[in-house]
Amino acid sequence: MSTELRNFLSLSYDELEQLNLKAKEQRKNRVASHKIQEERIKYLTDEKRIKAVTVLFSDLEGRLHMLDYDKKFLVKSWDNLTFDGSSIRGFTAQRESDLRLGMDWASFYWAPADVFGSGKVLVFGEVIDKDGTPYRGDTRGLLKTYAEGLHKKEGYTLNAANEIEGFLFKGENAERHYHESHSFEYVNTGGYYHSLPGDPLRSFIDTTAEVQRAMGFQNEKDHPEVAPSQFEINYGYGEVVAAADQIQLYKLICRQVATKMGFTASFLPKPVVGVNGSGMHTNVSISKGGKNLFWDPKGEEKLSKLGWSFIDKILTHGNDICLLLNPSVNAYRRLDPHFEAPNQIKASPVDRGSMIRIPIGNEKSSRVEVRSVAPDANPYLVLYSVFKTGIGGDTAKIKNLRQAERYLPDNIYTALENFEKAEWADKLLGSDVKARYADLKRASADRCPRALGTFVKAPEVQYHHEVYNQFLWNLF
Image (cartoon, rainbow, N blue to C red):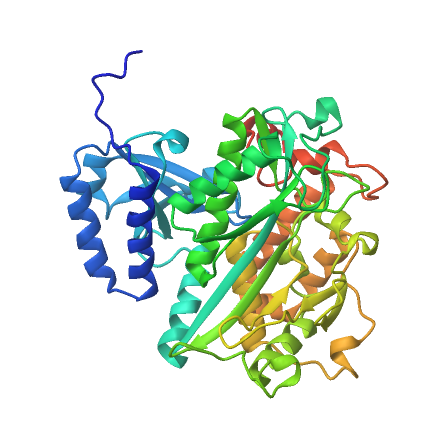
């Protein structure tokens, strides 16, 4: 079909980066929401080349959903957008299915036309219940409410940066077809830091990094990881909700770029037995008035008392929140000590088997790194549980808490039992959302063999939450 008559928005990568960085600065400076709303609506009204606005939201497990609204319709009806919540796993029952989508106008992104299609912009949505209150199953809204409340009450800004590892496999939809092939095929076997210029893995990393840069990610470094065909593309830290949004965008970009190249970007924690799995190391800090509250040049490992208290509380509740950080059957293959797995509930500046590491830092970069996080976890639940636990959790009276011989579960059923018994999980999520989440995880687990064994089973991949296949999920 001819496209010569279409005049849809298609900007250069430099123009995209400038627009996205300006929006990022507004968000960082906490420009009043009504001002940003006015600016965005005026932009959409005036920019005739935009045909649609893609609204993004996530379900309870962290699966990203997208709805395209005609631009002219959205400009008129942005405050009355409804959708069927009963179609979203973990959301409402059929009898109470109507939910609304509100616009978080500050989380507005311009995306490259060659990757996302021309004439579209992206914005994250907030799920609203029928009575107009934030929907309790919307974990993004939960995180945002918590972060805004802390800023208002304590002046805290919660900061996060995530190092998200993944694999690049040959063929499109390799995860969906795993039940037929029972294997994944590497595109590269070079290993850590090694990939020849122009080879498939390097080309994928380069292209993904270019898209991220255009979308205002402010990249830092990228490289092949330890395992064959494994990658990691790092970018700068951000305020906690923006950081969680960027995790969702990062994985979306990786999957889209890989598909366009004829490959599959996989964020299964352990898609191949015998090599290192993928993690999502989560670096966090708290600032107030521009000052990093985790930094103390005289403190142990140059970490402040607040920083160490934060660590102690996460160690105390490590087993309580493990299911939120490692939500899939496959994630417990990764917690294997033979492959630098962070399965020990302790803290260390050097031991990479520790759940928490204290990286070398300075006044700007001092932080706490939570290493026992799987890349298929819901990023909003991860950051919410880490910050709320580190700030408001309990501190156990365990001798030598930071180096005690304690371990994370090696299977999802133990993690489920810990989570369901934990009073802290009720305080985090409330009994209703906690029960819904546990039910989803148990249903997934029950469709996989209880014993992990020595090779990855097809159900582990099929019911991995990021694999979108409506037919498979309907059978599920």
